[in-house]
Length: 429
Image 1 (cartoon, one colour):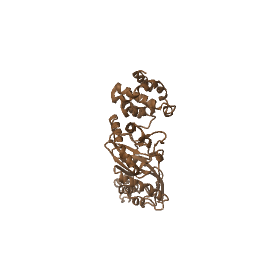
Image 2 (cartoon, one colour):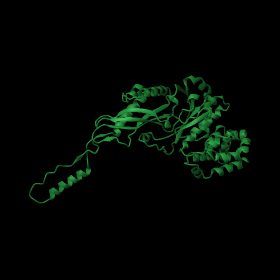
Image 3 (cartoon, one colour):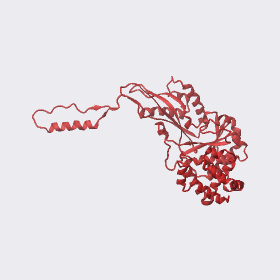
Image 4 (cartoon, one colour):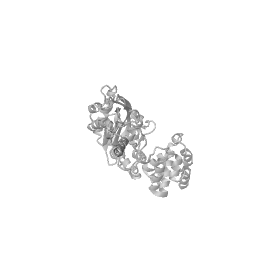
Protein backbone atom coordinates (compact mmCIF):
# COMPACT_ATOMS: atom_id res chain seq x y z
CA UNK A 1 0.00 0.00 0.00
CA UNK A 2 1.36 3.46 -0.98
CA UNK A 3 1.93 5.79 1.96
CA UNK A 4 2.99 9.45 2.18
CA UNK A 5 5.87 10.67 4.32
CA UNK A 6 4.25 13.33 6.54
CA UNK A 7 7.48 15.28 6.95
CA UNK A 8 7.83 15.51 3.14
CA UNK A 9 4.31 16.90 2.85
CA UNK A 10 5.05 19.56 5.48
CA UNK A 11 8.26 20.60 3.76
CA UNK A 12 6.50 20.90 0.39
CA UNK A 13 3.70 22.98 1.92
CA UNK A 14 6.22 25.34 3.55
CA UNK A 15 7.98 25.89 0.20
CA UNK A 16 4.75 26.83 -1.52
CA UNK A 17 3.91 29.29 1.26
CA UNK A 18 7.26 31.09 1.01
CA UNK A 19 6.95 31.42 -2.75
CA UNK A 20 3.50 32.98 -2.47
CA UNK A 21 4.66 35.61 0.04
CA UNK A 22 7.91 36.63 -1.75
CA UNK A 23 8.42 39.90 -3.78
CA UNK A 24 8.90 40.23 -7.52
CA UNK A 25 6.59 40.37 -10.50
CA UNK A 26 7.44 37.00 -11.98
CA UNK A 27 5.16 33.98 -11.43
CA UNK A 28 6.24 31.65 -8.63
CA UNK A 29 8.20 28.65 -9.77
CA UNK A 30 6.23 25.47 -10.06
CA UNK A 31 7.14 22.73 -7.60
CA UNK A 32 7.28 19.03 -8.28
CA UNK A 33 5.02 18.25 -5.30
CA UNK A 34 5.61 15.94 -2.40
CA UNK A 35 7.96 12.97 -2.69
CA UNK A 36 5.86 9.84 -2.54
CA UNK A 37 7.72 6.93 -0.94
CA UNK A 38 6.91 3.30 -0.33
CA UNK A 39 8.70 2.19 2.86
CA UNK A 40 7.65 -1.44 2.54
CA UNK A 41 8.84 -1.81 -1.03
CA UNK A 42 9.67 -5.27 -2.28
CA UNK A 43 8.45 -8.64 -1.03
CA UNK A 44 7.43 -8.34 2.63
CA UNK A 45 5.76 -10.94 4.86
CA UNK A 46 3.08 -9.25 6.93
CA UNK A 47 0.74 -10.18 9.74
CA UNK A 48 -2.03 -10.27 7.16
CA UNK A 49 -0.13 -12.99 5.28
CA UNK A 50 0.22 -15.21 8.34
CA UNK A 51 -3.41 -14.60 9.29
CA UNK A 52 -4.54 -16.18 6.01
CA UNK A 53 -2.61 -19.39 6.73
CA UNK A 54 -3.85 -19.48 10.31
CA UNK A 55 -7.44 -19.17 9.13
CA UNK A 56 -6.99 -22.13 6.76
CA UNK A 57 -5.33 -24.29 9.41
CA UNK A 58 -8.04 -23.57 11.95
CA UNK A 59 -10.79 -24.32 9.44
CA UNK A 60 -9.22 -27.75 8.89
CA UNK A 61 -8.97 -28.38 12.65
CA UNK A 62 -12.56 -27.32 13.25
CA UNK A 63 -13.74 -29.65 10.47
CA UNK A 64 -11.38 -32.45 11.63
CA UNK A 65 -10.59 -32.81 7.91
CA UNK A 66 -7.15 -34.27 7.13
CA UNK A 67 -7.34 -33.50 3.40
CA UNK A 68 -8.22 -29.90 4.17
CA UNK A 69 -5.21 -29.68 6.49
CA UNK A 70 -2.85 -31.19 3.93
CA UNK A 71 -4.20 -28.78 1.33
CA UNK A 72 -2.66 -25.89 3.28
CA UNK A 73 0.84 -27.41 2.94
CA UNK A 74 2.90 -27.47 -0.25
CA UNK A 75 2.08 -30.62 -2.19
CA UNK A 76 5.77 -31.42 -2.71
CA UNK A 77 6.63 -31.42 1.01
CA UNK A 78 8.56 -34.61 1.79
CA UNK A 79 6.86 -34.91 5.22
CA UNK A 80 3.25 -35.00 4.03
CA UNK A 81 2.89 -38.72 4.78
CA UNK A 82 4.06 -38.13 8.37
CA UNK A 83 1.65 -35.23 8.77
CA UNK A 84 -1.19 -37.35 7.41
CA UNK A 85 -0.49 -40.22 9.82
CA UNK A 86 -0.07 -37.91 12.85
CA UNK A 87 -3.13 -35.74 12.29
CA UNK A 88 -5.41 -38.52 11.06
CA UNK A 89 -5.04 -40.14 14.47
CA UNK A 90 -5.47 -36.82 16.26
CA UNK A 91 -8.59 -35.87 14.35
CA UNK A 92 -10.02 -39.34 14.95
CA UNK A 93 -9.42 -39.07 18.70
CA UNK A 94 -10.50 -35.44 18.98
CA UNK A 95 -13.77 -36.32 17.27
CA UNK A 96 -14.53 -38.71 20.13
CA UNK A 97 -13.09 -36.43 22.82
CA UNK A 98 -15.54 -33.62 22.23
CA UNK A 99 -14.37 -31.82 25.37
CA UNK A 100 -11.14 -30.68 23.65
CA UNK A 101 -11.02 -27.34 21.85
CA UNK A 102 -7.98 -26.35 19.80
CA UNK A 103 -6.53 -23.80 17.41
CA UNK A 104 -3.36 -22.87 15.50
CA UNK A 105 -1.19 -19.79 15.86
CA UNK A 106 1.23 -18.63 13.15
CA UNK A 107 4.03 -16.33 14.22
CA UNK A 108 5.72 -13.54 12.29
CA UNK A 109 9.39 -14.07 13.18
CA UNK A 110 11.86 -11.26 13.76
CA UNK A 111 14.31 -12.62 11.18
CA UNK A 112 14.63 -11.83 7.46
CA UNK A 113 11.11 -11.74 6.02
CA UNK A 114 11.66 -9.01 3.44
CA UNK A 115 13.31 -8.82 0.04
CA UNK A 116 13.59 -5.17 -0.96
CA UNK A 117 14.38 -6.11 -4.56
CA UNK A 118 11.00 -7.80 -4.90
CA UNK A 119 12.35 -11.34 -5.16
CA UNK A 120 11.35 -14.48 -3.30
CA UNK A 121 11.38 -14.68 0.51
CA UNK A 122 11.90 -17.99 2.32
CA UNK A 123 12.19 -18.42 6.08
CA UNK A 124 11.66 -20.85 8.96
CA UNK A 125 9.28 -19.99 11.77
CA UNK A 126 7.12 -21.53 14.46
CA UNK A 127 3.62 -22.91 14.29
CA UNK A 128 1.90 -23.35 17.64
CA UNK A 129 -0.96 -25.74 18.23
CA UNK A 130 -2.89 -24.89 21.39
CA UNK A 131 -5.59 -26.97 23.00
CA UNK A 132 -7.81 -26.87 26.07
CA UNK A 133 -9.37 -29.81 27.86
CA UNK A 134 -12.57 -28.01 28.79
CA UNK A 135 -12.95 -27.70 32.52
CA UNK A 136 -9.44 -29.03 33.23
CA UNK A 137 -7.24 -26.23 31.91
CA UNK A 138 -7.48 -22.63 33.03
CA UNK A 139 -5.53 -21.59 29.93
CA UNK A 140 -4.38 -23.15 26.67
CA UNK A 141 -1.74 -25.90 26.61
CA UNK A 142 0.74 -25.39 23.77
CA UNK A 143 3.04 -27.35 21.53
CA UNK A 144 5.36 -26.03 18.83
CA UNK A 145 6.16 -27.17 15.30
CA UNK A 146 9.05 -25.85 13.22
CA UNK A 147 7.75 -24.83 9.83
CA UNK A 148 9.05 -23.42 6.53
CA UNK A 149 7.36 -20.58 4.63
CA UNK A 150 7.73 -18.96 1.20
CA UNK A 151 6.46 -15.82 -0.52
CA UNK A 152 7.39 -15.78 -4.19
CA UNK A 153 6.76 -12.13 -4.96
CA UNK A 154 5.29 -8.91 -3.60
CA UNK A 155 1.73 -9.81 -4.58
CA UNK A 156 1.95 -13.57 -4.03
CA UNK A 157 0.32 -15.26 -1.04
CA UNK A 158 2.43 -16.66 1.78
CA UNK A 159 2.85 -20.42 1.40
CA UNK A 160 3.37 -23.08 4.09
CA UNK A 161 6.05 -25.35 2.66
CA UNK A 162 6.70 -27.78 5.53
CA UNK A 163 5.54 -28.74 9.02
CA UNK A 164 8.14 -30.55 11.10
CA UNK A 165 7.76 -32.83 14.10
CA UNK A 166 6.29 -31.34 17.28
CA UNK A 167 8.71 -30.25 19.96
CA UNK A 168 8.73 -32.74 22.82
CA UNK A 169 9.14 -29.83 25.21
CA UNK A 170 5.46 -28.96 24.97
CA UNK A 171 3.98 -32.22 23.76
CA UNK A 172 1.00 -33.77 25.60
CA UNK A 173 0.97 -36.96 23.57
CA UNK A 174 -1.61 -39.36 25.03
CA UNK A 175 -4.00 -39.00 22.08
CA UNK A 176 -1.12 -39.50 19.63
CA UNK A 177 -0.25 -43.08 20.60
CA UNK A 178 -3.48 -45.09 20.32
CA UNK A 179 -7.18 -45.03 19.55
CA UNK A 180 -8.65 -43.57 22.72
CA UNK A 181 -11.99 -42.69 24.26
CA UNK A 182 -13.02 -41.15 27.58
CA UNK A 183 -15.56 -41.24 30.39
CA UNK A 184 -16.72 -38.03 32.06
CA UNK A 185 -17.54 -37.88 35.78
CA UNK A 186 -18.34 -34.91 37.98
CA UNK A 187 -14.68 -34.20 38.81
CA UNK A 188 -12.74 -36.10 36.13
CA UNK A 189 -12.20 -37.06 32.53
CA UNK A 190 -10.91 -40.64 32.33
CA UNK A 191 -9.18 -41.33 29.01
CA UNK A 192 -8.18 -44.81 27.87
CA UNK A 193 -7.41 -47.03 24.90
CA UNK A 194 -10.66 -48.37 23.51
CA UNK A 195 -9.37 -51.88 24.34
CA UNK A 196 -9.12 -50.80 28.02
CA UNK A 197 -12.74 -49.61 28.24
CA UNK A 198 -13.74 -52.35 30.68
CA UNK A 199 -11.02 -51.36 33.15
CA UNK A 200 -11.94 -47.67 32.87
CA UNK A 201 -15.57 -48.44 33.64
CA UNK A 202 -14.65 -50.71 36.54
CA UNK A 203 -12.47 -48.04 38.17
CA UNK A 204 -14.53 -45.01 37.20
CA UNK A 205 -16.11 -44.50 40.62
CA UNK A 206 -12.82 -44.86 42.47
CA UNK A 207 -11.08 -42.38 40.18
CA UNK A 208 -13.97 -39.95 40.66
CA UNK A 209 -13.70 -40.37 44.43
CA UNK A 210 -9.96 -39.60 44.32
CA UNK A 211 -10.53 -36.52 42.15
CA UNK A 212 -13.29 -35.28 44.44
CA UNK A 213 -10.98 -35.69 47.44
CA UNK A 214 -8.30 -33.64 45.67
CA UNK A 215 -10.77 -30.81 45.04
CA UNK A 216 -11.96 -30.91 48.65
CA UNK A 217 -8.36 -30.52 49.80
CA UNK A 218 -7.09 -27.82 47.45
CA UNK A 219 -8.20 -24.37 46.27
CA UNK A 220 -9.93 -24.62 42.91
CA UNK A 221 -8.00 -22.87 40.10
CA UNK A 222 -9.99 -20.43 37.99
CA UNK A 223 -11.79 -22.25 35.19
CA UNK A 224 -10.96 -25.72 36.54
CA UNK A 225 -13.53 -28.23 37.76
CA UNK A 226 -12.11 -31.54 36.54
CA UNK A 227 -8.85 -33.50 36.49
CA UNK A 228 -7.64 -35.40 33.42
CA UNK A 229 -6.66 -39.04 34.11
CA UNK A 230 -5.12 -41.29 31.44
CA UNK A 231 -4.95 -45.07 31.80
CA UNK A 232 -1.48 -45.81 30.46
CA UNK A 233 0.43 -48.97 29.58
CA UNK A 234 4.13 -49.92 29.80
CA UNK A 235 5.03 -49.09 26.18
CA UNK A 236 4.14 -45.41 26.57
CA UNK A 237 4.89 -44.69 30.24
CA UNK A 238 8.28 -43.20 29.42
CA UNK A 239 7.21 -41.52 26.18
CA UNK A 240 4.57 -39.09 27.36
CA UNK A 241 5.78 -35.54 27.92
CA UNK A 242 7.19 -35.45 31.45
CA UNK A 243 6.37 -39.13 31.83
CA UNK A 244 7.87 -41.55 34.34
CA UNK A 245 8.81 -45.13 33.48
CA UNK A 246 6.50 -47.72 35.01
CA UNK A 247 9.32 -49.11 37.15
CA UNK A 248 9.74 -45.77 38.91
CA UNK A 249 6.16 -45.10 40.00
CA UNK A 250 2.71 -46.68 39.93
CA UNK A 251 1.23 -43.36 38.78
CA UNK A 252 2.50 -39.92 37.90
CA UNK A 253 1.44 -36.38 37.14
CA UNK A 254 3.10 -34.46 34.34
CA UNK A 255 2.73 -30.67 34.21
CA UNK A 256 2.21 -28.26 31.33
CA UNK A 257 3.12 -24.66 32.04
CA UNK A 258 0.97 -22.03 30.39
CA UNK A 259 2.74 -20.00 27.71
CA UNK A 260 0.90 -17.40 25.63
CA UNK A 261 0.48 -19.23 22.28
CA UNK A 262 0.49 -16.05 20.20
CA UNK A 263 3.76 -14.91 21.78
CA UNK A 264 5.24 -18.40 21.56
CA UNK A 265 4.55 -18.45 17.83
CA UNK A 266 6.61 -15.26 17.59
CA UNK A 267 9.51 -16.85 19.43
CA UNK A 268 8.82 -15.69 22.99
CA UNK A 269 8.60 -18.39 25.65
CA UNK A 270 7.82 -16.37 28.76
CA UNK A 271 5.06 -18.04 30.79
CA UNK A 272 1.79 -16.21 31.17
CA UNK A 273 1.14 -14.74 34.60
CA UNK A 274 -2.20 -12.97 34.39
CA UNK A 275 -3.52 -12.38 37.89
CA UNK A 276 -6.10 -14.90 39.01
CA UNK A 277 -5.31 -17.52 36.38
CA UNK A 278 -3.43 -20.77 37.10
CA UNK A 279 0.21 -20.84 35.96
CA UNK A 280 0.19 -24.49 34.86
CA UNK A 281 -1.99 -27.54 34.52
CA UNK A 282 -1.28 -31.25 34.56
CA UNK A 283 -2.32 -34.69 33.38
CA UNK A 284 -2.35 -37.85 35.49
CA UNK A 285 -1.00 -41.13 34.15
CA UNK A 286 -2.35 -44.19 35.98
CA UNK A 287 0.02 -47.08 35.25
CA UNK A 288 -1.14 -50.67 35.16
CA UNK A 289 0.47 -51.33 38.55
CA UNK A 290 -1.68 -48.71 40.24
CA UNK A 291 -4.82 -50.79 39.66
CA UNK A 292 -3.41 -53.55 41.85
CA UNK A 293 -3.05 -51.27 44.87
CA UNK A 294 -5.45 -51.42 47.78
CA UNK A 295 -5.10 -47.66 48.26
CA UNK A 296 -6.06 -46.85 44.65
CA UNK A 297 -8.38 -43.99 45.67
CA UNK A 298 -5.52 -42.36 47.58
CA UNK A 299 -3.26 -42.74 44.53
CA UNK A 300 -5.84 -40.95 42.36
CA UNK A 301 -6.23 -38.22 44.98
CA UNK A 302 -2.44 -37.85 45.42
CA UNK A 303 -1.85 -37.28 41.71
CA UNK A 304 -4.91 -35.03 41.45
CA UNK A 305 -3.49 -32.80 44.20
CA UNK A 306 -0.27 -32.49 42.18
CA UNK A 307 -2.37 -31.25 39.23
CA UNK A 308 -4.24 -28.66 41.30
CA UNK A 309 -1.01 -27.48 42.97
CA UNK A 310 0.37 -26.62 39.53
CA UNK A 311 -1.84 -23.54 39.63
CA UNK A 312 1.11 -21.99 41.56
CA UNK A 313 3.90 -23.66 39.55
CA UNK A 314 6.22 -20.87 38.45
CA UNK A 315 8.93 -23.17 37.15
CA UNK A 316 11.40 -22.57 39.95
CA UNK A 317 13.40 -24.98 42.08
CA UNK A 318 10.63 -26.55 44.17
CA UNK A 319 11.74 -28.67 47.11
CA UNK A 320 10.67 -32.27 46.43
CA UNK A 321 9.46 -32.75 50.01
CA UNK A 322 7.12 -29.76 49.55
CA UNK A 323 5.61 -31.34 46.42
CA UNK A 324 5.19 -34.87 47.72
CA UNK A 325 4.33 -33.80 51.27
CA UNK A 326 1.39 -31.71 50.07
CA UNK A 327 -0.07 -34.62 48.09
CA UNK A 328 0.57 -37.10 50.92
CA UNK A 329 -1.09 -34.78 53.44
CA UNK A 330 -4.17 -34.39 51.24
CA UNK A 331 -4.64 -37.88 49.82
CA UNK A 332 -6.22 -39.23 53.01
CA UNK A 333 -6.27 -36.24 55.37
CA UNK A 334 -4.17 -35.32 58.42
CA UNK A 335 -6.07 -37.46 60.91
CA UNK A 336 -5.75 -40.62 58.82
CA UNK A 337 -2.08 -39.92 58.10
CA UNK A 338 -1.16 -39.41 61.76
CA UNK A 339 -3.27 -42.25 63.15
CA UNK A 340 -1.91 -44.69 60.57
CA UNK A 341 1.73 -43.58 60.38
CA UNK A 342 2.34 -41.37 63.43
CA UNK A 343 4.74 -43.81 65.08
CA UNK A 344 6.86 -44.27 61.96
CA UNK A 345 6.89 -40.53 61.38
CA UNK A 346 8.11 -39.73 64.88
CA UNK A 347 10.85 -42.36 64.84
CA UNK A 348 12.14 -41.33 61.38
CA UNK A 349 11.66 -37.57 61.44
CA UNK A 350 15.23 -36.54 62.32
CA UNK A 351 16.53 -38.56 59.38
CA UNK A 352 13.88 -36.94 57.19
CA UNK A 353 15.07 -33.47 58.22
CA UNK A 354 18.57 -34.12 56.94
CA UNK A 355 17.56 -35.76 53.66
CA UNK A 356 14.69 -33.42 52.83
CA UNK A 357 17.05 -30.44 52.70
CA UNK A 358 18.81 -32.10 49.77
CA UNK A 359 17.51 -32.93 46.29
CA UNK A 360 15.25 -35.44 44.50
CA UNK A 361 17.78 -38.28 44.53
CA UNK A 362 18.37 -38.13 48.29
CA UNK A 363 14.63 -37.92 48.93
CA UNK A 364 13.76 -41.05 46.93
CA UNK A 365 16.83 -43.22 47.17
CA UNK A 366 18.58 -44.90 50.10
CA UNK A 367 15.54 -46.78 51.37
CA UNK A 368 12.66 -45.62 53.58
CA UNK A 369 10.86 -43.81 50.74
CA UNK A 370 7.52 -44.46 52.43
CA UNK A 371 8.73 -42.77 55.61
CA UNK A 372 10.06 -39.79 53.63
CA UNK A 373 6.65 -39.24 52.06
CA UNK A 374 4.86 -39.67 55.38
CA UNK A 375 7.17 -37.23 57.19
CA UNK A 376 6.77 -34.68 54.42
CA UNK A 377 3.00 -35.01 54.78
CA UNK A 378 3.36 -34.51 58.54
CA UNK A 379 4.91 -31.07 57.94
CA UNK A 380 1.66 -29.99 56.28
CA UNK A 381 -0.35 -31.72 59.02
CA UNK A 382 1.48 -29.51 61.52
CA UNK A 383 0.70 -26.41 59.44
CA UNK A 384 -2.98 -27.37 59.29
CA UNK A 385 -3.05 -27.94 63.05
CA UNK A 386 -1.38 -24.58 63.63
CA UNK A 387 -3.32 -22.45 61.13
CA UNK A 388 -5.91 -24.50 59.25
CA UNK A 389 -5.96 -25.32 55.53
CA UNK A 390 -5.17 -21.70 54.74
CA UNK A 391 -1.73 -22.13 56.31
CA UNK A 392 -1.16 -25.24 54.18
CA UNK A 393 -2.10 -23.43 51.00
CA UNK A 394 0.02 -20.41 51.91
CA UNK A 395 3.08 -22.64 52.35
CA UNK A 396 2.41 -24.57 49.13
CA UNK A 397 1.98 -21.39 47.12
CA UNK A 398 5.28 -20.04 48.51
CA UNK A 399 7.20 -23.21 47.63
CA UNK A 400 5.65 -23.66 44.18
CA UNK A 401 5.85 -20.00 43.22
CA UNK A 402 9.46 -19.31 44.24
CA UNK A 403 12.47 -19.10 41.95
CA UNK A 404 14.64 -20.96 44.46
CA UNK A 405 14.42 -22.60 47.87
CA UNK A 406 15.89 -19.46 49.40
CA UNK A 407 13.22 -17.41 47.69
CA UNK A 408 10.57 -19.81 49.02
CA UNK A 409 11.79 -19.23 52.59
CA UNK A 410 11.58 -15.48 52.03
CA UNK A 411 8.05 -15.70 50.63
CA UNK A 412 6.89 -18.09 53.33
CA UNK A 413 8.51 -16.13 56.13
CA UNK A 414 10.49 -18.98 57.67
CA UNK A 415 13.21 -21.39 56.62
CA UNK A 416 12.78 -25.07 55.93
CA UNK A 417 14.96 -25.85 58.97
CA UNK A 418 12.73 -23.77 61.23
CA UNK A 419 9.61 -25.37 59.79
CA UNK A 420 11.00 -28.87 60.31
CA UNK A 421 12.05 -28.05 63.89
CA UNK A 422 8.56 -26.74 64.68
CA UNK A 423 7.02 -29.87 63.18
CA UNK A 424 9.33 -32.11 65.22
CA UNK A 425 8.34 -30.27 68.38
CA UNK A 426 4.64 -30.70 67.54
CA UNK A 427 5.18 -34.40 66.87
CA UNK A 428 7.04 -34.87 70.12
CA UNK A 429 9.75 -36.64 68.13
